[in-house]
Length: 262
Image (cartoon, rainbow, N blue to C red; front, top):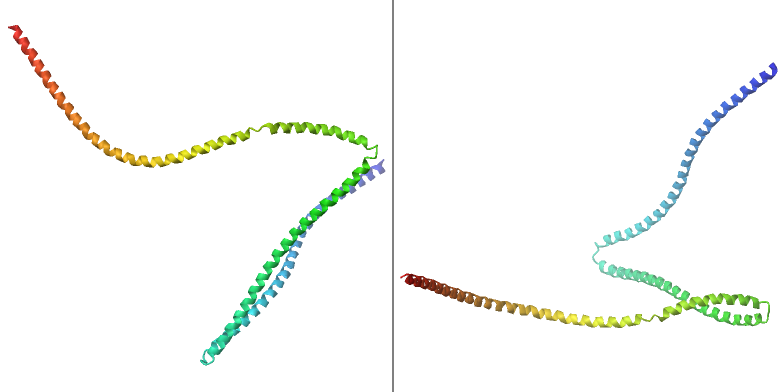
């Protein structure tokens, strides 16, 4: 029994050592992942090579500009000689005009070529469609005559007749919609409304005439006010006369009563 117990203890210690070693290996793997990120910086070196090719093209353009500047410097030196001015200026002007004419002709030719290509494509498509339709109709008529002689295919035709009956029900619904022709009568009523619009235009002209009449009426109102004032003055005079008569009647009645006492 002592020998067996010692073996077990030895195996247990060996298992514990293995577990500790595995944990250390996991830590090392995390450090390796950080080193992979540094490798991405090497891709930037490839982009620099592409930029060097573009610089070579720019150097060629600078050489052309230097040639044009040399011609202008020669003209300034020849201005000192008065006798040679007239002869050389006339010859150089003619050369410049010829160069401009050549450039204009090249631009016009390019535009005309593009337009002609588009028109040719449209014409070809229309001709192909007409030829195909005529050939298909002739082939179908020959095949139908051969199928009628076979007796086995007649059973399939009976199944197709049942499907046609269902289609007839749908056609009846469409016929009911055709009977509704009341929409045409409504159009006649709209024509009557258009006649009313013409009458409205005439009313607008009458409104302009009424504005002139209103001005005349205002003048007449001023005359009526004068007449009203005269009537009011006459009414006041009549009221004064009436009051005077009432006073006289009252005085007479008092006088009659005074006499009756005696």
